[in-house]
Amino acid sequence: MLDVLGYIALGATWTIALTLGSAAIGIVLAVPLLGLARSRFRVVRGIYSSIVHVIRGVPTLVWLFLTFFGVGQLGITLTPVAASLLTLSVIATAYMAEIYRGGMQAIPAGQWEAAGALNLGRFATLRDIICPQLFRAVSPSIATQVIGLLKDSALVSTVGVTDLVFRAGVMTQYHAHGLFMFGFAGLIYLLLSIPVAVFSRSIHARITRKYAIA
Amino acid sequence: MNDFSWLYTWPQYIPQLLPGLWVAILMTVIACVGGYLLGFFLALLVESPVRLVHHAAIVIVELGRGVPILVLLYVFYQGLPQLGVLLDPGTAAIAGLMFSAAGYSSEMIRAGLNAVPKGQVEAANSLSLSTIDRYRFIVIPQAARISIPPLVNLTIIIFQATSLATVITVPEIMQRADVIGSVTFQYMSVYLAAGVLYLCITIPGAVLSGYLEKRLGGGRRASRRRTVKAFIPGVREPQSA
Image (cartoon, rainbow over all chains, first blue to last red; front, side, top):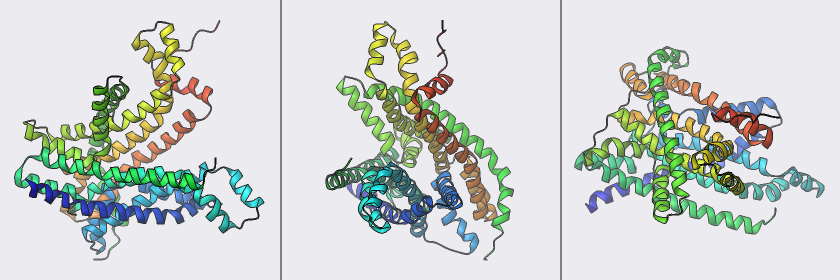
């Protein structure tokens, strides 16, 4: 009984590692994409929006199978973990970029104008005026997205990463009682999403306290 | 074995995948229609003044939103036999998707219902409209303006999630792609074709949702006139004198 639960719970390490890894990569890589989105050239903005629409329009499972099974046709072999991390990171990047873009629109034009009136340079404007407001605006959405990634990470069981769902499946095949095994895995997903929500609320409160404007 | 034939061979697999697309669309339609109805009732139950009902509804909603759809599918397909309920793959997949759709949609519908000013309900009561009429003519048309854009997005998400049904052997797009791939070993081409098929639905869906967001979001008065009436049957313009 306990060893069965322990075996399933151990899968949380891969679930957490892949979720946090892809979230971190997505949060960083979405910044250059935001640059594309804010470009003054229509063509560049078009490229950005087609990248994002294609990445978000194809189901995660299709991307995962393309990077795991598909690349074999090109003579490349990826391990399950590498393929999973790659897929989840690319998807996280697209979603985070859209979140940043929405956050930028929430910043009033007056903030840019005021920075210009104070004769701040472009870099100083971004660092001291725009970024704090941007992160205050987007931090709740990022938390939602990280919880979404947590749930998306369940798909990696289909390519053989031994995460929660994979282990619950193995135990179902050994002992039956599928409701119990998958119910336990589902419960762990619910429990894992709580710290993300709490952490996001505290960081949001801290940013709001530090830059308490409008 | 470095070849780039997948760049031009993928369209040949589309005809073989098309029957899967119909299965995916059918699953989406059933899961969404049933899920949104359930979601509407869950939204009403969450607003219930009875504590027990309120908490029970919240637990159901959070299970639908917080548990990955893949786990829900496994629970309905491999878990329910433990209770003596054997579902065939298609039913299990639709049940899992419906459960998830109900959880997500109830929050969106609740946001819409809560956005209707209280005075509207009081006015309906003072006109002594029945509960059904109050919802049909007063509350739902106003709540729909808030709820419809996210519900369209959710429909797209549920359509994408039908791809997960392949793990419980529903013959939708990915299942067919797997079968073809395991025969031809042209996995790149086959999955590329599958991805393009999904895009054929999701891109127009994204455009529609962007349009609805703009149309229903901005210009309060004008939009309510034109669009909401198009969505709610039985709501007619009053005869002007």
